[in-house]
Length: 240
Image 1 (cartoon, rainbow, N blue to C red):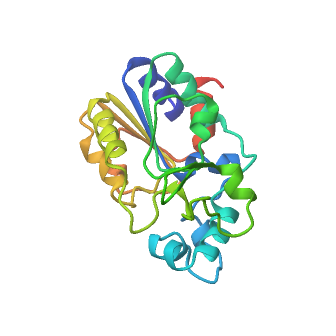
Image 2 (image 1 turned 45 degrees about the vertical axis):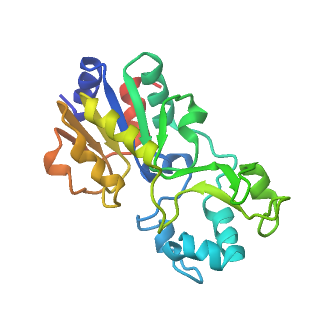
């Protein structure tokens, strides 16, 4: 039995499946990841990407923050790939109970997934830091420079920057979903970024599957490890 056939058997067997994904889930849609050879962290900028995506840089260098953010984080016109579509289908037939994602691109919702837990927020949402007024991704992307609200407050993307805490409700919901799952599929993530990577310790179910191009710290604990593109694997298994 091939790895793909075994994963298909797992999915057919269990009705309480949770998916936990990272940047590698969206690379097949054309979005750059962070830590690969050609990822964002390997590119040359005036400041390191980790610095430009920090809360303190947002406060102290807002123009340079938004210049980087709009060029590298906002992905207008990007479409869901086979991974997103497969997961939406699994949810629609009652197999998949939750998608937990480290991505901020909104592609899971665009594919039709309903129960999506966004650990790091979303570029689709932007709020005035003073009054809380909502601004769309299109408004932020199309504005030249730093966007301010009519009240004078700066408009901040609803994404978790370095030095910021994860949303507690989202984190608690993710822990609850993983702790109840019978099959946990983890894909497209290096599992080295905490606290997100620490969520795996809450899994008490029966089968752990890892789909990732590179090795992860949890490979030895997994029941199945697949080193192929996430979209190809899930697309072939689900038939989309």
